[in-house]
Amino acid sequence: MPVAIDGPDFVALQVHDVEAAAVFCEKHLGLRRAAVSPPHAVVFDTRPTPFAVRALMPGVSLADTTRPGLGVVIWFRTPDAHALHEQLDAAGVKILTPMADSPFGPMFSFEGPEGYTLTAHGG
Image (cartoon, one colour):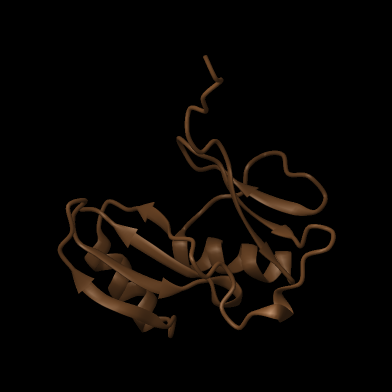
């Protein structure tokens, strides 16, 4: 029988400016840095799956695309999607899709660090 995976165990966005991306996540998403991060990344204390922003992996260039992460959808759970939407909009964060109902509660997408599309849902 083939070995199977359990599911995502760690999610990281590759970025040019790790510190600026980390500050975005702290300021606009309320994420807190984990106690330990490797030198090339900032890991956040998210559960159940750790999330990080990290330096580009060797051989990777985001100059090849104007939309990093195109084709990948990352959803973040929040207790109040409407309040987060208002908070991000007031802070000038670009909202990419309007608030809508989904099977996972209200949801919307916004532009995250370095142009990544991120989606928030819940509450």
